[in-house]
Amino acid sequence: MAISFPDGFLWGTATAAHQVEGGNWNNDWWMWEHDPTSPCVEPSGDTVDHWHRYPEDIKLLADLGFNTYRFSVEGSRVEPKRNEWSPAALDHYRRVCAECLDNGIQPIVTYHHFTTPRWVTNHGGWEEPSTADLFARYAERVTGALGDLTQWACTFNEPNIVATMGYLAGVFPPGRRDSALRRAVNDILIDAHHKAVHAIRSGPGTQNIGLTLAMSDWQAVDGGESRRDRIRLNMEDVYLEAAQGDDFIGVQTYSRTRVGPDGTMGPEGDTPTTQMGYEVWPEALEATIRYATEKTGGVPVLVTENGIGTSDDEQRVDYVRRALRGVRSCLDDGIDIRGYTYWSALDNFEWALGYRPTFGLIAVDRETFVRTPKPSAAWLGQIATSNFMED
Ligand code: GCO
Image (tube, rainbow, N blue to C red; front, side, top):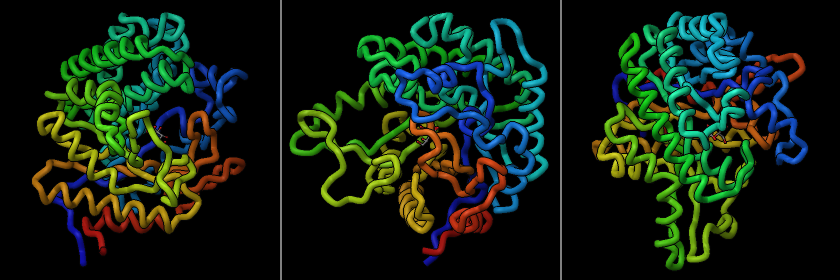
């Protein structure tokens, strides 16, 4: 049986500047990677040298059949010091957008994907309310340079992860563990999002503007409902509410999380797990698309990330197939889904876990930088080209 997708459906892959470009030494993550007290297993270094090799990568993605590519702009390159803007860096990202368009690919630009310039961190980072205004200025600059070439803008990638991992769990910079502070950071990030939406809308081009959210299929177990709802409130609900009125909501889903009366529980019984330790649970995508739609009051969905860290490429195909069935079932119920971007285009730097997890459709030799597409790349590219999935 073949499953079809709507005309004009966006099919793509995603990356983030710090995870693929290499040499992003002027941001908080680079400092964190080199801090012996952080949980990082290794530094990012050159990553996969996408900074220089983006033409080859974009061409490869186009040849595979994709019609969109989501990437992020590195703020520490664009504004390396307060009020010192880099026209060369902006020009670089303009060339990336142009390269996409020349290859028949719609760029989806993320303005902030986890990394924050060092000078912003010194200014107080995301605990400092005025950082929201600095971010709006930055959004205005980036839009001034790229707006006429782009139609899709994500202000923040997973602000809920920035707040939760950085200010509650302490595993992302700045390594804090303070639940009141985490809620304050949520508010500042939401303020920054709204200000950036306004700045992007005021600039050149016509953008679909939204934020992307790390979502999970939060499942209550043994009476864990109220605990589950409390966790989800500060993790997802406050952001979904803030996204009402946006042009889209970026759904990013990898697995489910079970919650009992005492809190989150690990994987169940013999459910297989991924390199990240998550349960292999691709059905979570359908559940989270439905939840995002309900909580935003029907804001259109773009699946901005979904994927699996695995060394078994057949398992990757199976995972995506099951996830796409869920997308189809949401479409059947009239939910407005604009596209699907797989995380990730390339094997890359997975934050504190370094280069161990392999999410990519394309493997990279980190000595020679040679790219080798995996069978899953051709499989998903074929779906992208035909807008059909054989199931
Ligand atoms: C995120 C980020 C990506 C990750 C991916 C795999 O969702 O956390 O957008 O940078 O690499 O999710 O964990």
